[in-house]
Image (tube, rainbow, N blue to C red; front, side, top):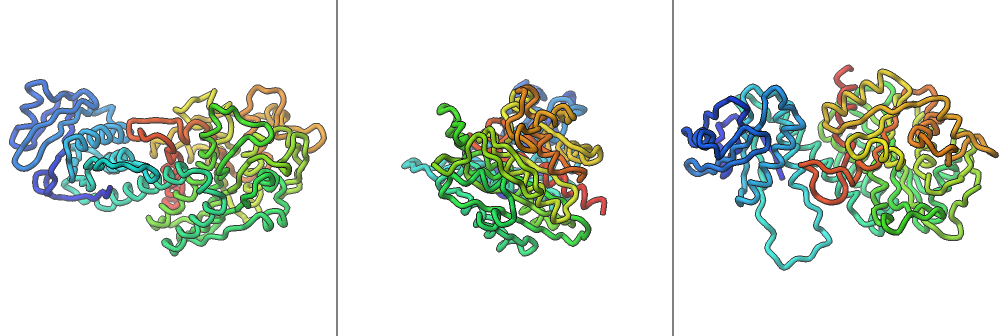
Length: 480
């Protein structure tokens, strides 16, 4: 779906379907009173998400309840936009035009575009169907008295990037191997001259001394990849590092995952997908910021060479780690990626990963878990989450959690004891490698494919993290 803005009135923009919102206690001044008549008869109501249909001239009108004006925000705009899109699809609409509510800011226009595009997402490339596909709107227009073309365009770019991250997550693991993910990043760079991509293979990873990362993939015939995406928006200075976990399939290794849920482990690369597509969006938007994306791409599967409980490996910075749980592999990948980002002089560093079941138990699918060692960076990330509508809740770091990661025979263990506070303990292991460099860890377990909102209804990947990472990088550009 394509989104654009127009300063033409809704009835003058050649749309076959027009959406107009109504707030509690307010009137609708559109279509010669047809929409207001619906409201007065009680067919239309201001109740949030209530929809009614009227007709005027050549167009149909969808009257959408927006609730109380004081409570209407960007997230509610995304939700109501998704509801309107679905109703417009049922009506066979081809072009949908939203009349931006009077007094609404730019963020509402952007949210209407994003909610519509995200709701329009489909992943059906592997389905064969003899039936004619249903007709759905292909063009969204946002009508407003002021020029919103850049606002709507940018919103569309970000939503399209999120949908591409969903595509990556939904691909089967026999197709989206670490090699294929690296090739995808290289193709992205061909389309975006501001992005330079280096894809390092398993031999390079081992030669560098990334023993923590290397051990995760040693049981797989699929070679590992360290994917480096350099985006230079002309800002100069130290680059912001975005680090993503890219485990394209996680069997749990020799601590095999339960059969009832193992099939969803293709989503374990969702953090990496978010990093790749966020950088693609930043380049398309030409945001003046310098960003390094790092994605550690590997499989965690089983054969005679697989890492064993009790193995000890040496990470890039020299730290030794007891691999006492082969299913705690994500922190091993991220440990070396974070150490590498530090070596390249990046600051701050933000990592994003489907890391722990403990986070899912603590926060469910409403909030990502956020951990950080720098108050300003934590505040920046939380503010970006709020603007993006991708929520995170700060969870604690503490020396007691760090002590849980101390190894018996090595510096650290990837299987903390005791078993309480495991999300924080996993974060403390990553904190060890970040050290004093400003760093935030986003644990998106449960957000990558289980989270559902009214505009993320399609089964599978959600693309969580793309919007917030773009917002974060944009906030750094705005300060320059």
